[in-house]
Image (cartoon, rainbow, N blue to C red; front, side, top):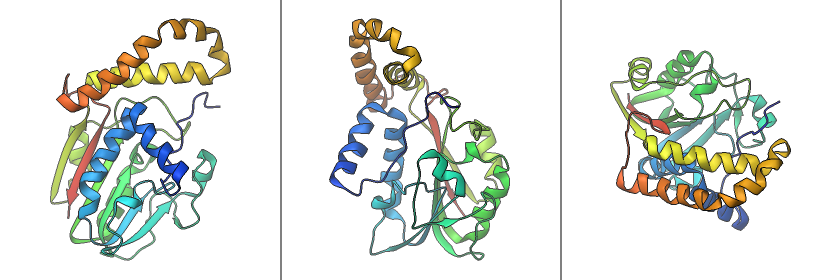
Length: 243
């Protein structure tokens, strides 16, 4: 059993959902950096857009509704991790059930670490993309073992450039720095101990150390704003590709 499963990243489709979605980014630096990357790229997408491993489609709202047609796909066991989305196509995690060159763009957020046969999935992303199609992929680097046992890999920039080599253009960017990652770990430590019964005995100590939590939140945001720290140990990586 996973003792501290990640909170599901749900779409901001209701007022409460929007409050939850945007407030979460104050404390969840990993999600914040992913959202920042998506907010920069997705509004530029046009045509048929594929969301690989879409979950609850949390970034669908960033697409231009009049210029795009959205297609979400995910595996059947996504329901086991609190992702339930009736408006998607179920697939096997490797073979995308669409014709060659069908899509004009695609996104794939925090999925590849859960794909044991990741190259097969990447090759199929390439297959279903038309010439000139663009894609954005995010993967974690500094992240705990999660969605157990379906968490298999962490990828270096060198590996990412090789496994996406079929695309004519491949750019890899770090999300955050080592300082951002340290702050994120401190924030997670506080939340884990406050929400997991086996750690409740630490709560009095955490209350005394609460100023450290506030400092970690502020410093984490500053590290992103001012690019403080080393980029060689980030929270994760964003990959921009073009066929």
